[in-house]
Structure formats: C-alpha cells, structure tokens
Amino acid sequence: MRGQRPPVAEKGAPRVLKEFTMVRVALTGLGFMGKTHLGVYQRLPEVQVAAVCDGVKERLAMTSLDAGGNIAASGGKIDLSAARKYSDYDAMLGEGGFDIVDICLPTYLHAAHAIKALDAGYHVFCEKPMALNGAETDKILAAVKRSGKLFSVGQCLRFWPAYTEVKKLLDSGRWGKLQYAEYARFSAPPGWGWESWLLDGKRSGNAALDLHVHDVDMLLYLHGKPRSLRSNGVFERDGSISHIATLYTYDGFVVTSTGGWNCSDSFGFNMRAFWVLEGATIELDFSKDPAVMVYPKGEQKYAVTLLEGDGYYHELKDFVEGVSKGRGSGVVTGESAAQSVKLCLLEIESAQRRKELSVRL
Image (cartoon, rainbow, N blue to C red; front, side, top):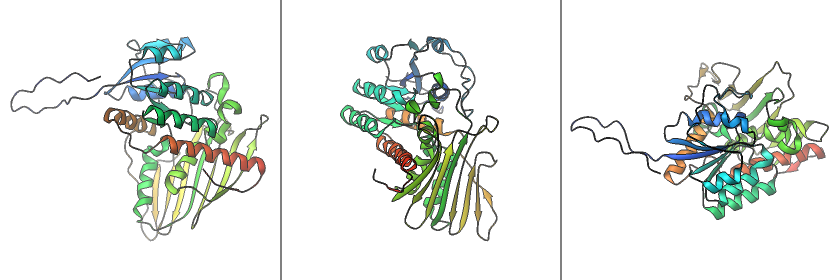
C-alpha cells in the first residue's frame, strides 16, 4: 500500500516531504512486549497498526502503554481506535489487510503462530527466544524458506546502541586482540507475565532460556561459536534453571556469562558486560551513566557516545525498512536466532549433566 503523494512544491521552494511506502502491522499479544512494540510503532511514521489480537479481550480496549516489565521501554497513551480488534488469531490472519505479523506471545506459542502467519503469506517479526526447542526453530525456518517472506526475532541487543558501539570498537582492531569477555544479566523474578507463564519452565524455559538468550546471542554475534562449554545453575522444583553460569572455550581468549531472575524484588534489573583487550578494557554497565566506558592502557579513560533510542526501536525500524525495501538487513536472521536457542539448550544440558559439552549447532 502506497502512502499519499505529497503536494507538488512551488517552483524554487525546497521539497521537504517524500513519498514513502506505508507498512501495515498486525500485532498479537498485548502484554509487556506487545505494548513496548506498539510504543515503537507510534514513533515510526511509515507504520500503520492495522490490527491487534489478544485472548484477553479487555486488553483490546486499552489506552495506556504502561506495562510493567524489567525495562521502562513503553509508557504513555495509545489510540487503537483505527485498528481492527481480534481475539481469534486465525480470523485475523484470514481477513488480512496487513504486511507484517508481530508476535509478542509467550514463548511456547511462538512456533505455531509464526508458522501460521508465514504460511498465510505474511512477513513475521517474533519476540525472543525464537522457540522453546531446536525442533520448533527448525520448523519455523522451513516455513520461512517455503514462504519466501522476511522473518526476524527480537534479539534486541544486536541493535542496542551500547552493544553496537562496542561491536564497532572490537571490530576496529584499535585496541588489539581480545583476551577476556564476560556477560551478565540479573533480574528480580518476572511477576508481570500473563498467568505467571515466565516462571513456568515448560512454557518459558525459565531464565536459562528466556533471559540468558540475550547474552548468548550477543557472544555468538561478537565472537562466533565456541568449541565447548561448561555450565552450572540454580535448579527449580520443575527442573528448570532460574540462574545459569557458563564458561565457553574459544581459541586464544576466554568468555563467561551468567544471568538469572532470582534476585530480590528491590534489586530490579541490570545488564552489563566487560571486555579485556591487549590495549584497553571496555566496560558496559546499565546501572552507570555513561553506560559504556573505554579504559586504554597509558591513556585517559573516555565515555562512548551512543545513538538515541533503545534496541526495541532500532530492531523494529530495521525490520519495517526491510519489508519496505523487500530485503532484510541480515543483522538478526532466523538462522542466527535458532543458533542462540540451541546454544542455550546445550548450556542447560551441560548444567543438568554436570559435564563439559562440545558445541555443534
């Protein structure tokens, strides 16, 4: 659907407006992440929210984007009067009138809903983690292939300005080779989920998959696949892991990561990371301002200037632009998101077996 052509400027006057392609989105799941995504779409003039879907019918009449969650990424008011409302996902897909299906449902529903949307001929953006297990990720990838549609997953750290600037520093080689890296993510228990689904390991994979997948995805993005890993964790009654810690084996450097959501309620949330290179140390810590500091050897430390916006904004803007252009950026692909799920699952297996495991993704 094409946007309206702007009025013709008078001779000699600068032309300010440009023709653009309006991208229509249907969003399913109006909880924390759904509201976060709606808040982003309000800031993207090329996006029209054409439809929303949620099994909790009261949410369809919402006017506020205040959503709880562990990051204050949404908030403010929302006007959904122009969007069609559905409590039946299949009915929404059948009626159509949109280009993208944005899936912000609990993880155990991702695979079925993504495959249905792809097979119905829509581009799909799915929240992380991609699915609960490797078999489901493979089924989604098969649906992407046969549909020919664009597909991406909300591995938002690849777009978060703090992490993207660190990637530039590492890739530049300015500070020499990497010697050590660590990633950490800590949270109070996620009590905001619908019917406490996040705390149910069978529906979310618990923190070892749902929370930890962010750092796993980032270390794959920055450092590639490790040769082996050894994990340990805090196990819950259902056998799932609420906190996990892993040592990864790479050639020439060391990587560790740890994360969980069994901190006290008063702690809240924080994410941080640390890189030691031959010529400098880089620290990322969201509890500090500035969030990213570089400590060169023999030079003064300095703060890294970051782009405005968060990872949610930049990842959705990237996907919308990809749909408009007919090709994705490739920053987050279905294949990369599937690898992140599979590496998390291997860590969970290592912790369960108390054994170092080779990495084959």
